[in-house]
Structure formats: structure tokens, C-alpha cells
Amino acid sequence: MPESYQAVAVKIEEVSERVRRLHLHMEGKPLTFKPGQFVMADLTKPDGTPHKRAYSIASAPHMGDPLELVVKYEEGGVASEFFFKVLKEGGSFPARAPFGAFVIKEPVPESLAFVGTGTGVAPLRSMIHALYHDGLGPTRKVWLFLGVRYETEILYDAEWKKLAAEHPGFTYIPTISRPQPDWKGEKGYVQEKVKAFLPFIPGMKAYACGGDAMMKDLGAALVEKGHPKEMLHYEIW
Ligand SMILES: Cc1cc2nc3c(=O)[nH]c(=O)nc-3n(C[C@H](O)[C@H](O)[C@H](O)COP(=O)(O)OP(=O)(O)OC[C@H]3O[C@@H](n4cnc5c(N)ncnc54)[C@H](O)[C@@H]3O)c2cc1C
Image: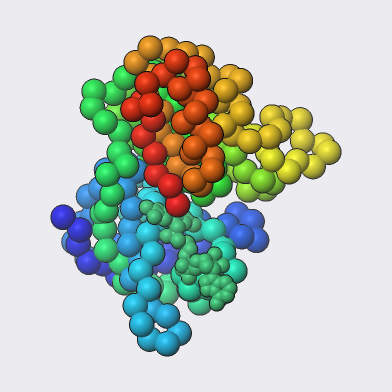
């Protein structure tokens, strides 16, 4: 059942010109949530009317207080203007949480693919860290495919590399759609990388977050590989 909070910005980190990590202390009752769920920011438009927008929790429950959101700037967007031009460290806004059913389903299968574009990595980060914290990750095959336009927009790159170094079963594949000439990694769209690198393993489940077009292509790619379409759980922003 969602509760009401005052979300206090303990720390604001600039990832790039258009992406910020917000570390929020949720003032109110202790917040319990499942990895993949989101916070509803109850903001106000310049004309005084309510403007509520959803933001996935990027931290896992065991990571505690403050929790983390990653927000992307969309020019002219009411919440975007608030998060990038009004909210400062120490400032706050009203919010409600937790919401959402985009969570890992039980039983957790032996192999899992996570696919995200841009800030769509947020709910996946919560899920993946929870899996490894709960001891479920290390015994499984886990893939993370992340797609962004520019190299500077890859979120949590160092964390994913560390996880891959620590766990042979974790495979991290970032891909850039508008790479600089010196980018040595994968180039192109994330759904193309899934097609190229994700093996077919019966019983595998996929969790994906991103835009509509990516999700359609991803669904088609997975079905083409022989998966039933119900294996894909997703959230479209
Ligand atoms: C379940 C869920 C989880 C989500 N999680 C995240 C997350 O973790 N991180 C994240 O960044 N986003 C997330 N989103 C998206 C988020 O909720 C907002 O939709 C997004 O931040 C844009 O909101 P806004 O108020 O800034 O834009 P809005 O005010 O809703 O505007 C929408 C678009 O219209 C354009 N627009 C509006 N008014 C004008 C104007 N006057 N002039 C020009 N253009 C205009 C804006 O450019 C903007 O692109 C999530 C969405 C859902 C549904």
C-alpha cells in the first residue's frame, strides 16, 4: 500500500548534462518496496495544477536510505524543469511510494536477461543488485544489455564491470548508438545486441525497460530466437 512522504534530496549527482542521480531520504514511515517498483513525485505545474510523474527506484531495498532515482532531462517537461533547475541538495518534494508490478516473478529462473535503454536501467539496477545480495545471482546466468546514444550516458558502468569481474555468470554488454570514433565497444541498438549475443536457453526470462519501439523489436527478436512471448516482462516509459 503506497504511503506519503516528503522526499529530501540528500545528494544530487550530475552524470551528464541530461541525466542526474537523486539520492533521496524519504521522510515518513519506513519505505518497503520490491526491486523494480517506482516512486510517484507529486509536483505542481506553474499554473498551480497537480503534476504527478513516476520514477523507478534505482537502488535495491538492502541499499537502504537514501534511495536513488535517475532522472533524464526532457526540455519543457514540468518534472524535468523541477529536478534540473529548482531542486537543490537539502530541498524536497512530496511523493508517494511504492507503486508498480514490474518486479521479478517467482520462481526465479536459472537464466535471466535484463535489457534497458538510457535511464531504463533504473529498475533493472534494483533487481540485479537484489539478486546478487539475496544470493540468487551468483548461481545463475545473467545478461545485462544497456543501450544509450552517447558513451557519457552509460549509467553505473563501473558497477556492471565489477559485477562481471566477480561473477563469471554475469555478462554485461553496453552498446552505443551514436559512438565517438574512439569507442571500442558495441555499436548500434540494444535489441540488435540481444539478437546477436543472447543464447537461447529454455526457461529464460527477460526484464526490459525502455521505449515502445525498442520493446517491439526486442519482443520480436526473442520470439525469433524461439522464446515464448510471455518470457518478456517489461515497462515502457
Ligand atoms: C513507471 C514509470 C517509471 C518511470 N521512471 C523514470 C525514471 O526512472 N527516470 C526518468 O527519467 N523517467 C522515468 N519515467 C518517465 C517520467 O515519469 C516522466 O514521464 C518524464 O520525466 C517526463 O516528465 P516531465 O514532467 O518532465 O515532462 P511532461 O511535462 O510530462 O512533458 C512530456 C513531454 O512533453 C514535452 N513538453 C511538455 N510541455 C512542453 C512545453 N511547454 N514546451 C515544449 N515541450 C513540452 C516535454 O519535452 C516532454 O518531453 C517513468 C515513467 C513511468 C510510467
